[in-house]
Image (cartoon, rainbow, N blue to C red; front, side, top):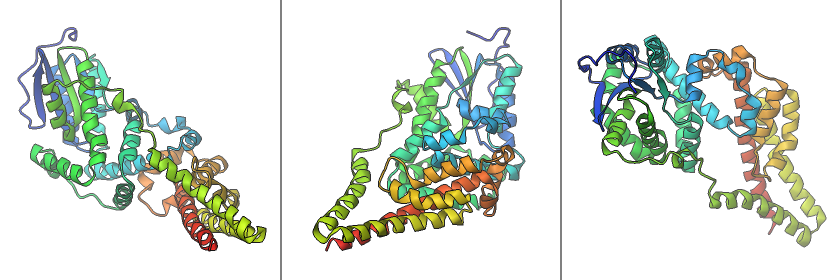
Length: 400
């Protein structure tokens, strides 16, 4: 249904970032943007005002839209629920990505995602319906993480960590060059070769998801605002008119059976080894092995918590928590201790609001209470993993 009183479309914009696709009598105008570009924000508003479409589709899900449009969004974040559902690691990864984008945008005088928010405001000012067409960012991050191998995960973590302290060196001219189709195709190709599973979850699946949501949007003339890296994939999907099973790409893949066997197998072997030592060498030998396990896990986790300047209760609890959780794969020491830290020293609202800017400042990880929770999670987890390795080797050697 057309937008009431809409003017007929003006001549098509000649900008290289704007592409028109005509499918089944509908006209879809794709606007490729850079998420930290002032030029992109201005282009988006100009195209919407000139085209006066029946609907505007944007590359946002409800979570990201709320984050952009409501500065006080942190007040409603239940951090303890995030930890309970084991979403602390994806949240940290997301904050790192946002921090890097904000640093880049700060150098250009524009916040990341400004052009997407500008699209919604321009449409609302003209009474044009807006559709948030992207997949839930939490689903995207979890699918990307689940599909990535352990080695690739390590590569990704190191890359994200490095990006925290990089100083972006891009200007509008460079962004304009990067938005060029040939450059983006090359970048997508390199990502596909280096991290194929990551590219599928972050780019290919979202291209299909966005395409299906665009097809569901009302009207005969639609303006679509997406990152330039998605334009080619969406255009191809629209032209091919291939069907997309949204339910299939909205599911979180279950943990593989092999990983479950490994996760439960190691604790089972440890307990079996201690039992065998007790039978073959006596209760005293078994007790010594068990005591070594407790200290091997408890001491590194405690030191990790202490290095994070955790609450004193958390530091003490780490010694008791780590030896137990290392034998129960459904929950790790890091999550338990992070939850306890969040309960005993909850972050202030202003610390939530400043975390994206402070995450790239090493000292802020100890000063900001939210970042300190992440630090407790990371360091105590590393301590527990080290303890599991050392304790397991020792117990295995006691078998002989």
